[in-house]
Amino acid sequence: MSAGKAILAACAAAVATGVFVPVLRLKRAVKDAEGRLEDCAAETAMLSYGKMTYVDCGPSCKASDGMCLSDEKPSGKGSSGNGLEGKEPSGKGLDDKTSGGNGLDGKELDGKGRSDQAAGETLLSVHGLYGGYDQALENVGSLSSRYRILAPSRFGYPGSSVKGEGTPKEQAEAYVELLDLLGIERVFILGASAGGTPAIRFVLDFPERAKGLILYCSTAPWNEKPAKIPGLMGPPPIMNHDLSMWLAFPIYRRLYGMEADVVHRMLPLSKRKEGADLDARIVNRDMAVNFEAYPIEEMHVPVLLLHAKDDRMAPFKGPAGQVEGSLHRYPNLETKIFETGGHLMTGHSREIDAAVVEFIERHKQGG
Image 1: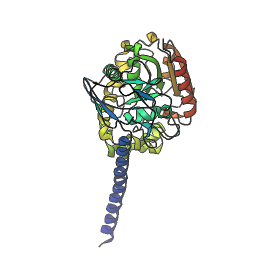
Image 2: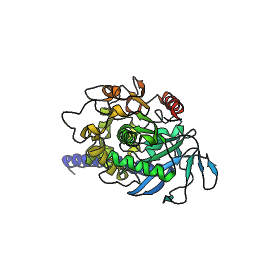
Image 3: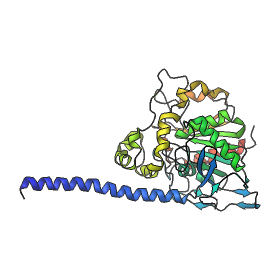
Image 4: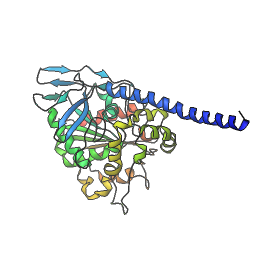
């Protein structure tokens, strides 16, 4: 073999190895991610528009048999299934453990013969981009020994169908239907990142069902209608595939200050891509497109807003972000603002949990 051919062969082998190794690692990561989803012991409710898959855990009582359930199934470590919206174990997930399920693994609910009554307060967790019931659970899992946690997948995310156009308004309606099915009258609702818009919509449309709103590194309403309505607000569809995101994630890390293992929690994207596309096209743009439909000034439900000033995904200050500029629009607002921590508010888990518990305890009697 000539020297030239040997060099070409060596180069080809190097390229093949460079591709093979990441693909092999990706396959292992996808398998692990699928296992974490299964560990959450999710249930599926059959609503009028289709399926909604969720985790229902924490202290609860079944009226049908009079039994109180307080046994909690661990869902593994760091199982947020989220990615750019995920929670590091050193961030919100205080104990590296979350509670999943209530012993009814994978059971289909038809709304008949079941009446669930929460023992104490219920926290409805609304996850962000590239999430699902696993991320929704981890975002508040450290509070599951104290409160009932209801952690559903939003439209197009693992196990949940899409109603109509998939708007935040339709998502809020689906939450009400789920609450009705489970016999839950009022909740504290937490919207994380991209989940902030459906959570805000829920409080605006169904204030009688909300005791309080918690905005966690959330997207924010505009202070005024933007002169130019933003286009796609999220990754392009080509990124909603395991391999493309796996290979491109180092760039996202540098842009948004994410930890290296966050990409593991975005997998498998085959179960999240419909929801991610919906977020980019519809959900994330809704407060700009339908600015007049978000009269934040009329929102009298108490609000707790937690955010970090160095958040690159949902910037705190203008002109890139609307968080600081929209604070005055909330009539009944409490804030917990951190100087550092990024989009995941890493390092502040104990402070965050303490603030959430204090907020819930103060407002649990409702208005």
